[in-house]
Image 1 (cartoon, chains in turn purple, green):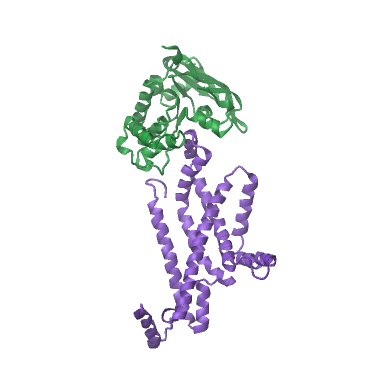
Image 2 (cartoon, rainbow over the protein chains, first blue to last red):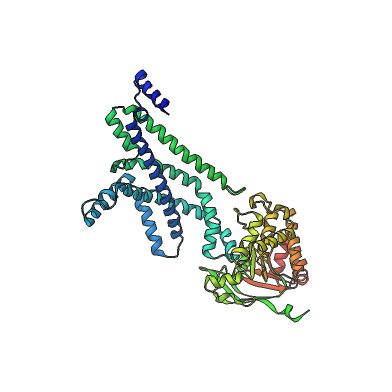
Length: 244
Length: 250
């Protein structure tokens, strides 16, 4: 590894391209921690937003009008406002309200607020994505399950959801890709993710153009991995002769 | 004939059903004996399919009564009660309605395992036997999308039979098939009827109805216009409306 690091040091001397995040141990460590933070933030938010999406879509099909209305307004609220404003609302709005309760420090950390905010943001879209998937399952297929004696829950878990999920996957992929890219907004509330630590690096080292390129490549690879995995998954659960 | 086989297993009495303002069934009555085969014919929109859906409780009725085996279908309210009924009454649909994400064998096995809670090993053996019976043993691992319409419909019949129903309902099961594959499905149904399965068929296959049915009901406008054994109804229809319909389709 040392050889690679030295090569970047040589590159700086020879060309003036200053990639401290490779050859300088301190910058390398903080950039790596930012990368890890972005991956963690993405993974947790993806998981939570999918859970929100599934639950929300399930509630939208419920017989309880109140529950359906709550989900409806949740979607409207999070779809019709910018994610950065949502993040500020959670962190500066709700966060400062909660501050007074316990004592000095904030009860909910900025990282937690970012996770909550981004998960709800992406979750609102996931509800719509899963709902459209559920609606695309033919009524007659559900009727067949009912006429075989499946209960409501069995029909949902064994027939509707597996089909709706397959129908939803391409749209879900899109939204999750957007979610990973939207984690950069956490920069605004000082979550030390990749963009935030990069700004620290370029402020110290004055290598703005280099860091911009590093960022682009890193996000490109990160999202590339996600897209690859999701496509593999899509193919693995593809059903012969079934629509998508 | 033994007495038990002539006692009606399905009794439909003065059934009224409406979707909102539209009255689909306007007082339909008929009975089916155990082991009997009844065909319901008539123009589209006459309420034939709705009638079948009422019999297995998929569609609630507003007036009248439906009795199937020991169930008062019109009085079933909870999902649990309806599920109990559907273990006895199985339905085969025009569009097959197989579960597209399950193989032919899995389609047949699902309901007995999850609804009847039978042991998967036993269900598996029975499912393979049923697929063999409908001539599709070789296709057990194929997905519905890989099967022809006729093959899918035969899997759907096997899927219904796997529940060991008392009564089978067939809703225009050959209407979506090409003429060649119609035959393979009709042969399967003919086999069932000969084994003594109680069958109610909504069909446009007049020759088949004539051959297989004990009794044919001609429906129009939500009512049964004429009921008779097939030879009588097809050769000597008594009502003008029946005559007009038959002259169009025969």
